[in-house]
Length: 219
Image (cartoon, rainbow, N blue to C red; front, side, top):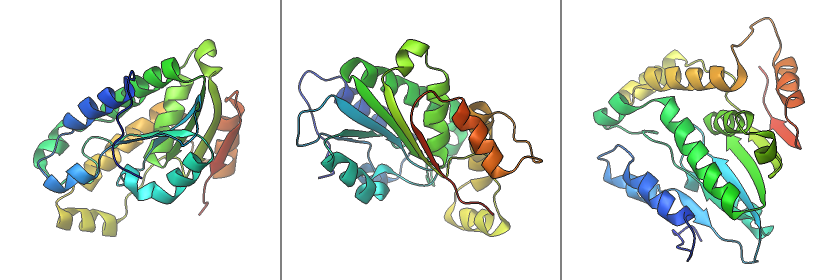
């Protein structure tokens, strides 16, 4: 089900292949953590773009993506550069603007090939798709039929234990966290500590002109 699918006369697979080849890593295990393009069994003009969380890859969301696919919706999900990489070269070249660029590029392609698009993302991925949506023109937004965000990254605070785990694994968690904070600021604006989480989400939802669902745990 999750094998890479080549579709004739489509620029989506070629973009995904090129995107994955440019991922900065020397870790061989990453070959199995590729981006995915899943075609529904039904002919459809609908697609969902799903962006994963900071330390996740598309296959980690297999159950969710499979269920959406069974609803007759094609699926595209990108792995992001340097996610969970232990390769020092990856961290030197890591910047959230590269994630933003990749998200915009695949969304531009999907807009040309599909008439209905659903945006979805978890954590970092939630901030990425909402950031992309906010930058779309009014005409482009007409193709967006829904936005589904799970714990979108409004901000990031790394605990001492997370930093220690990252250090043990050779992952520069603090630098990753800094990149997510930059992305969150771009997508949502600077965080006002005086405002509660619920108020913040309501404000963001009020700016979106399509059906939107936020799932966010409070503390």
